[in-house]
Amino acid sequence: MAVLGSVYAGDDRLLVDFNLHMLCALLDYVGGTVRVARATWFGHSGDNTERLIQLTRAAAGNVHLTSTYGTARQYIDWARVTAAGIDVEAQQFSEPRYRQQFEPFQPNLSVVDLLFAVGPGAGELLSARRRSDLVLPAAPQRYRIAAG
Image 1 (cartoon, helix red, strand yellow):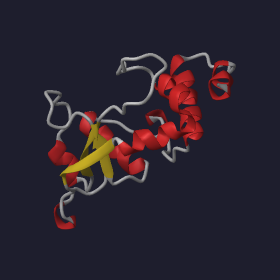
Image 2 (cartoon, rainbow, N blue to C red):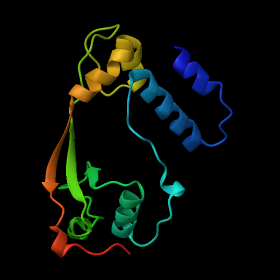
Image 3 (cartoon, one colour):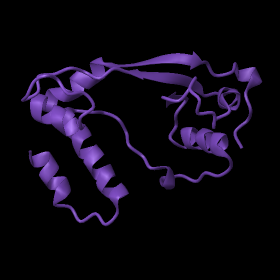
């Protein structure tokens, strides 16, 4: 698969750079339109919640998509996030089933397995399985905390 070859042929020195190039190459291959950005590209400081607010604003976002809302992981003050004018959506994802080379179906494999089995149509298959639910709407404008 040429898309993988071009990434592996690169000269990345850090795993994070390799992973970013792999992610972008795979998104291009499946026709993804997601904009990828690294937090280090933006100025941010403060506790976890303040950094999340700053990074969302820096990326011109108004929604934070999370997979940890409602779980035991309590490191974000969601009330502060919504007071800053940011909606919170919980990501719901169910793994697609597809024809693999060998049966029975083996879940939780790399996206590379899906790409080899399905090809560029993998993006559409993944998108069809993704859902996000609004769990906390942003505070009305009059109750929002000013950017700062």
